[in-house]
Each structure stands twice: as structure tokens, then as C-alpha cells.
Length: 167
Length: 189
Image (cartoon, rainbow over all chains, first blue to last red; front, top):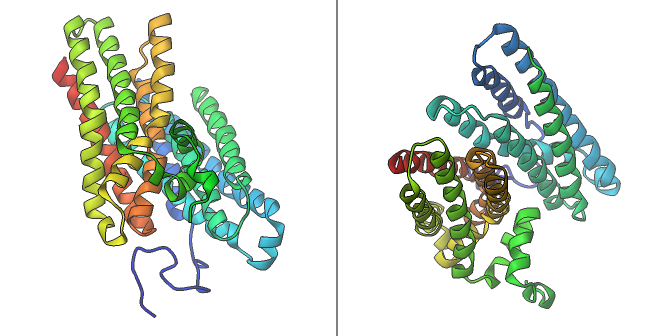
């Protein structure tokens, strides 16, 4: 079978993305957490550590919640195609990468202090993309985009509020 | 295949759908939206975004009224010619022509992606004029970020669902727009 590098499902049908890992997603969250202290007047190591930890917790929470909700909303598909939600979330959440790169560019290249709008757009876009990926795998209905978007909205709002009370 | 119901969707509804479910719009509805209409959306979005940038700079004493007018005109140019050029660049790099995707489709889909930017720009302008807030970054940049999602779907469609390519090109497009906006702001100042 011909392999097309860079194409989704390039390994061919059935071979899927079982080995797909979430490390790029968690790395994006860690980078967002790492940038936050640099938006303050003074960079403190305590703020940095707490911010990275908080971002990582948000990342794990986002991934786990999205997988759980996509599975719960598509029970028949979950029984027919185990691991579809995990694969959908792993692929969809990769779309945090452009926002993460742009946030780094904005802070360190352009000197802007705004990081959380990038993080918020990143989570919402990635979550909605995860829903779209699930639909490509056979999940039915717009709920697969709406539910992840709402989860992302709640998580990003909570994250922004927590960032506001960092020492 | 497009259904009759899909074909009957008015252009303004397609623009709103582009905010909510861009994946579906890119796949099924974009063929019905003429590219000049889409460029009006992106042109207006960037005109209002740059107007707010000008107003922010006016309030901080960096420019005069004539500078605000210049910024607004630059926004119009950026949102029409700039967006069209970026769309053509991505269309060429994705070799979308080989997949029977027309250049006009690419321009139209890219430009209509800025529907969310238009909503943010309009809201920001209200806050800017009514309360005197500085809204260019809070509303303008945020609006541009929200346009990356439809752009992402457009690039995926053009590139034949290449995930890595789509991520790289979306990043490049976002960087061009943000750096360009920043440089134009300095130029006008």
C-alpha cells in the first residue's frame, strides 16, 4: 500500500492512530502556561511553576473530558469502533499548535502582553476540530461540535480566571 | 453532492455558519458564495479592525485624525488584496488546482472565514466609540484568531486533508496577518 506522508490515515484503513500520543497537545498547554509569567511586570519562578502546573491540569482535563463526552454522545459508534474518541481528540487537539506558535510570536516577537485570547481560541478551535474528526469517523449530529465547544468555553474561562489570581 | 436545500442557503447565512461549523460550509456551501461577496466580509472586517487600531493610537496621541483615516484605508487594502494574496499563495502551495479546486473558491472560502472577525470588529467598535476603550488587541486580534479555524478547514480541504501541512500553513497565515498588522500600525504611527 502506498504511504502518503502528512496525510491523515496514511497508514491505511484499520491501522489507524492507535499509537497516537497526546504529547504535542500537552506541550502546547505547557507552553501557554510558560508564557503567562512573561506577561507580568516581574517574572517570578513561583508564578511560572504554578502557571505551568495549572496549564497541564487544564490540558489533561480537556483531553479526558472530551474523550468521555464524545464516547457518551456516540455509544453505538463507541461499541463498533473502540477508541474513535481518543483518535478524534488526539488529531483535533493538534490544531492548538498554530495558536501556540502565534502566542510565542506575539509575546516574544511583537512584545504583546495578551496570551489568554490565544489560549482560549486554541482550546475552542481544537475541541471543535476534535468533534469534526469524530463526525468523520461516523459520529452523527452537530452535537459533536457544540458539546466540545461548550466544554472548551467553560475550561478556557476557568483557566483565564485562575490565571488572574496567580501570585 | 449538494442538495437543493444546501443550494438555497443565502450568502449571509453561509457567513454565519462559517463561524459555527466551518467544516461543513467549506465542504458543501462555499461553491454558492461569490468571491466578491466574501471579500466584502473580509474587507469590512479588517477596515473596522484597523479603524479601532487607529482610534487607539489617536487616544494615546501617536497619530492625528489623518492617521486614523490612513489606518482604515490600509485595513480595507489588507482585508481585500492582502487576504486574496494569502489565499492564492496557500492555493498554489497546496497544489489545490490538481484537486479541481478553483482559485476563486480558495479566495472566497478564505475571505468568508473572517465572518467571526467582523462580529468581533463590530462589537469592539461599539465599545471603542461608546466607552472609549482601547479595543484593537482585545477585540481585533481576538477576531483574527477566531478566523484561523475556518482558514484551517479551508486549507485542509485544499490540501487533501493533510494535517501537518494544514497546521503549518495556518500558522504561517496567522503569523503573516498579525506581523503585517503590527508593522502597518508602526508605519502609520
